[in-house]
Length: 588
Image (cartoon, rainbow, N blue to C red; front, side, top):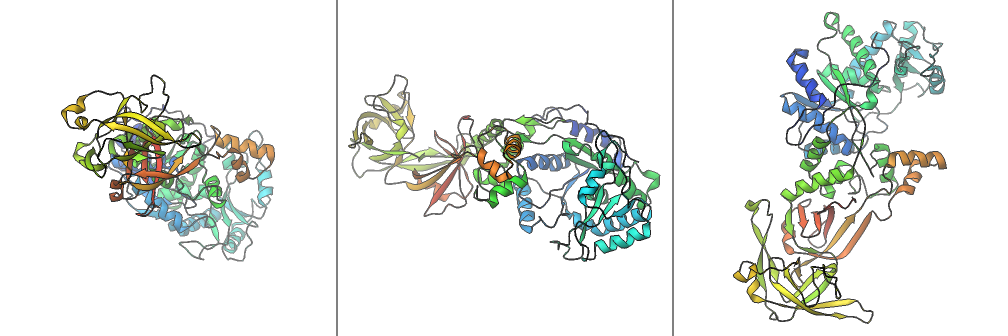
């Protein structure tokens, strides 16, 4: 029954290259199976998230695989919620998962729930009891664990293993009565307590929870375990290819066994190896300076360490969306790193590079000043204004232009001026010329300071023959600065983000801290958390044009980086999130 000890998949791994390139070992398997006519040439996948939290970037890799290949090869992918643990599930998570999948650019053929199959799974379990392949155990979880043995020594049989089927059937009914105390009875599959694969040593297939279910109400008090739900749900739906991450390699033989048993129950004994789902494993998406366990992310939210699941510092899909990441950039990154049969820790900078590359194509260019200092053009007429033309996106000329107001009093970045500058400082300094982008060439003539020596104002003169678009604009200067008219701009709040964690591999570090200090996960996380992961700048200015744009619009603050409009932003209080810098800064 089933295979012997499971081993790591050894199929050749080939990375998926952006823009085509070589197929992954998974895609090659799909091509081969369809060519051989397996499952009648059908191709069907599923994405089976647990509705117990928000999806993170790791789930995006599975989504891109499940939905992407189904679309590419004319198959279908269903969304199936693994709702077998009602104590942790919520409709909020269901809605967020659906939103995230759609935002990433994918659409399911059907929506299913593991709970749709609860009755069939129950009837199947009853059949197994009658067949002598399952029994009700009265031992505690601790006692069962002790009897499992080790990887080098066999387990020992439960004293209830040979319980008569009639007795197990009555107790199984009692497990679902609502009167059974959780933890007192379990249903176990009778397989082999000496099997080299520990998962075969009479695994639990039902446990008592006595918790109402969000979809089935109070009908069920005993719920199936994951290993008893996953493969059978795939089979009942007609799934042909079931993709899981590498920790499920050892689960595959049990997956296959339960599917075989179900086919026997259905009377399909003549074609046991035909028309059945087959599981294949691939590597998880691991990123440095990133923690992706939903349990730990939930702890961060519940303990107020972040503002919510969509905090832009979170690796959740909704967090990245709020941060300003594009779905196309995320999927491009996933395609670049590919699917393999070995785990690796990917550099977060690779994700940022993919986002930066995509946003360069789609972000609207605007001017913003985050650390302002006043610039006075002393020879520009007082009260005069001009409308300068600014290109919305040089990568997409079809997106047109907008205007930005020029006047005598401007804001520039404080970092763009230096009174006593080194030779290679090509921004503003007394006696040197720079160009104001989309406007004029100016010459800095001096500055004003307060009693503490802080610069409060910079003075310059402009050359009226050098306006952008005029013949004099061709005169070359080495520096170009962005600016805003002091009386024609909007105040704004800008949120600057850096890494949430101070350690490269927070997952391993978390385990070490918990072990050394015997503390809870949230306490260990506080040891690793970056106290400077968020800086809120409140004395910023942006051009009025951004007020026309919708929340979450992609922007490039010229010469600064990529930003987006936060959903909290209003006409009276503009709020922007920094997405990623113009260049790799090794920071989130």
